[in-house]
Image 1 (cartoon, rainbow, N blue to C red):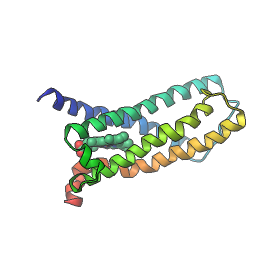
Image 2: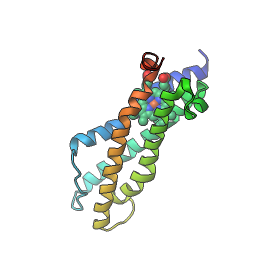
Image 3: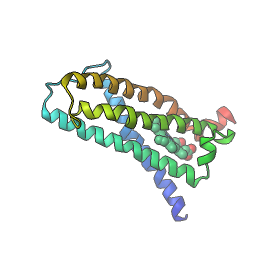
Length: 164
Ligand code: HEM
């Protein structure tokens, strides 16, 4: 096995680990807060610090998932075909597009608002509460998207039965 092939094996394992960290956090949040709970301006500094660490970890885990996923596509010569939804890579490609939407949602919608909720960017209490509603909806959007993404990502195994 050459070095690039070994990296492909490693990328797959690291990809699933990154996805577990990222979506594990998201699903835990669904169980802890089944309904929207506005940000509590009176919450302790210890809770704030734990939330900042947790948020940083899963945010960067999403980039690990993106990077390792892109590497696997490139190494297998599938990058263009998956993104263009070519017939032989359409199921995986659809999953990749939805996953890219999830990463963009996390970094471009959730994170700018979460910065205010977590106090990285100064904001009034009213603004922090408003932003917490946006982060809630953004996070739940990713929860919902993750369901078809998982189905499509693992289509290498069940795809031939369904689409073959
Ligand atoms: C962010 C962009 C992403 C890209 C470019 C990407 C790309 C890939 C690629 C190329 C594979 C290998 C597929 C195969 O060997 O058949 C894969 C596997 C996988 N992906 Fe992703 N992925 C991304 C995000 C995600 C997300 C968000 C999830 C979960 C919600 C996910 C879950 C998985 C799982 C569970 C596997 C293992 C599939 C298997 O072993 O059959 N991926 N991904």
